[in-house]
Amino acid sequence: MENNKKSTKNSFMIQGAVLAGAGLITKLIGFAYRIPVANILGDQGNGLYSIAFGIYNIALTLSSYSLPLAVSKLVSARLAKKEYKNSYRVLMDALLFALIAGGLAFALLFFGADALADIYQSEGLEQPLRILAPTVFIVAFLGVFRGFFQGMKNMVPTAMSQILEQIVNAIVSVVAAYQLTRIFAESGQVAAYGAMGSTIGTLAGAASALALVALLFILYRPRFQKKMLHDTNEDEDHALICKALILTVIPVILSQTIYQIGHTLDDFLFGNLMKLKGFEEAVIKSMQGVYSTQYNQLVNLPVAIATALAATTIPNIVQLNVQKKHDEARAQITSVIKINMVIAIPAAVGIAVLAKPIMMLLYPNLVTYQPLAVNFLMFGSSAVVFYALSTITTSILQGSNYMKLPVIHSLASLIMHVIIVAGLLYFTDLGAYALLIGNVSFPLIVSLLNCRSVAKHLNYRFCPMALFGTPLVASLMMGIATLGVYHSVHFIIPSNFVAILFAIIAAVIVYVFVILGGNCFTDQEIIDLPMGLRILKLRNKIFRRK
Image (tube, rainbow, N blue to C red; front, side, top):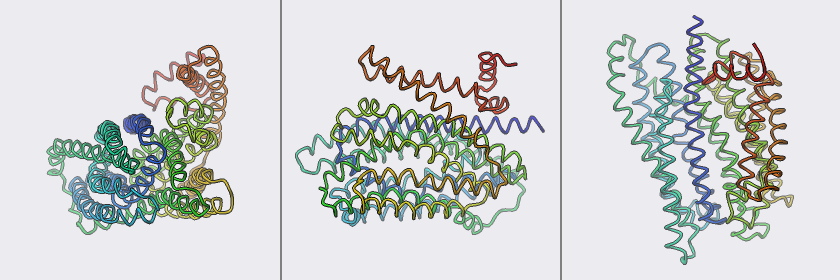
């Protein structure tokens, strides 16, 4: 029994590491290619691109974002009872759902592009939206296949497809954005064509990823069909599966839609209220570009790991709850929250202390609003922690069949978010800083409400020092060392890149040293990590522990 528990934990950590690693790689690729694209598009092009992507994300959420999680949850629940035929039926019904939902989202974006451009007061917005329309349709099917493999606790297809998607996206986005801005440089619509070029990469990446997962499914299908031949369970009615799928999808759609609406509402409120105050459209788009590209891109990078770990959490928590192994489920909750905080907190501190050097290095062409971008990073990096925590606690609640709670929490936070952002924009002169305050407050409120529900409904006891305190202390020590090393190296070698490189190396060494020496992880938690035994032996050797 003990070996089975250990095997389950190791499997969770390995699969989590696979998906988290892929998530980090894709985010790094995405971050890397967005740097040249941002410099090519300029502030106005970035603003237009961010508005289009905000609308696209809502359409994506309504049609397909929830499908990987929903399919994963339903498939894992049936596989826990060895219902292979019913798991396959979930896949078929989910594909039908993707066809309908993806088709509706496509029609909304493609035929409603002109109307959306008028609503958002953004000339040229219709061009990138019409490229993103078929992307939504493709991603709906992509999400179903990813969810099916995740439900089988196989994160490799999702990881491979994510990496391929981002590589294709990066190459096509840079090339298309450059070519279109060059061709239409004198047209007066260069920002719109540049944004459209970048979205062509999104379409190409999604199509490549779908082709890959479809191929992997075709190769895997004969093996799964053999398992279905030995399945003696009663066939589940398609109507019941569709009902279960819809009941699972709707809460996820609502919670994620609320989250995505927050971003596009920010665009809507900022564009209209700033114009009401007399700001020119070019200035408004430029500030939106700074917020969405230079700030959000960096903040979202470490959150990708939380999202990846959340995806691996769902099937495991579902299975443990089905098997009535509640103590093991709570132990897994502790592990996944702790790992998230160990990653998110130092990321937030590192971004804050190196805000100006990072902006100088990554966006040399975007100097007009550079002080604004630096201040965004310095004062808004805490959003990394709150988004990571809200994401993982939402998945924990959904995996434990408390599907409605994250929706209620997100809705309450959205109401507060709109009041805060609209109030600050209208009654103060904070301008773009109102968006920053809203971006931090939204996940903070969701995190607090989610944590309260996890403690109450799952009988889970949070240990603030182990989960948050030790990583925070280690991160602050790391931040001091990082800042000191950066300025020291820069004084000796006046190169921003070299100074940042040495500062990051010092940050990693100091943080890992303090975390391992500060008893953040128990011996068993370290063993459960990938290469855990080696890490444990290294820690014991360094700190002379038995």
